[in-house]
Length: 231
Image (cartoon, rainbow, N blue to C red; front, side, top):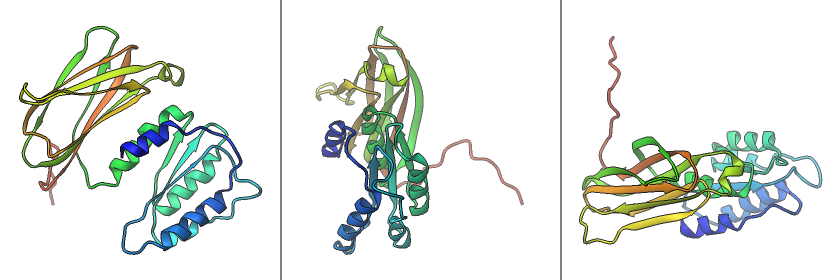
């Protein structure tokens, strides 16, 4: 996953776009791999060249291979990309600039796993003192992903720097810090230590930030209150 995020940071728009050729090549490569789940990501910053798009994605729809589509920049053919994602069972993402790509790839990665939402909250971060929140992890959680996504305008996103530090239940253990530019940061914990974890967060600009914790667990989790139903 880290390799995907690093590669996403290096993506820049440019060159011509051959949607049919790219999709046909992906289908050819997928056909060589047997017995595994297949999911494709289509990333483009322009309209199909040299001519009209000829629905190469139908092979993905026929084989039930989901294709997530990302329109990078305002020049992308968003209508066609939305249709490709819808027809194949994927999801469409709009990325006005490359700064949004890390968060989009993170969302796609997490969606491929059988995850359960355990908590979502919105925190107002400011350039002042760091905000502190806590998360209780129990032994049933095999994996926990905690994402933080700032809700700011595109021009502000380029200058946003956030820092988040997770401290394990026992103070003797080393805290884990995620710091960088852009609107999206994340933590990834396999078999996290049970107990109450502390998260401190700060930002160099004021930003409403959505904190979302998802987990892989054998338990069936229900969100309360559960609406009553009557026959």
